[in-house]
Figure 1 (cartoon, rainbow, N blue to C red):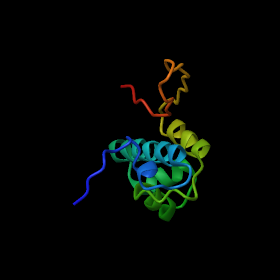
Figure 2: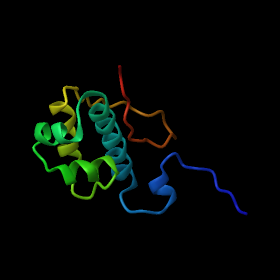
Figure 3: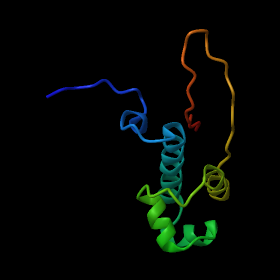
Length: 104
């Protein structure tokens, strides 16, 4: 069995297009799922986010093709959490990355 080290992004490892965007959307959806699980039922979340229950179910299962990053940001805000975007410079000769940091 041949084993490969992960790049830190499973979507890149799988060779999918736009892997950084896919990883960010997956991380945002995970945070939204956590907020929903901690605060409300899926039916209540659907009302808060102004989407259907089947869309909440899809979101919770990671089916994200119908959700833009911006829309996921709005969902996080609607659930009472802030979204903060920070840009930091990488040292020379280090590949810049995009990632989500969750603060308590």
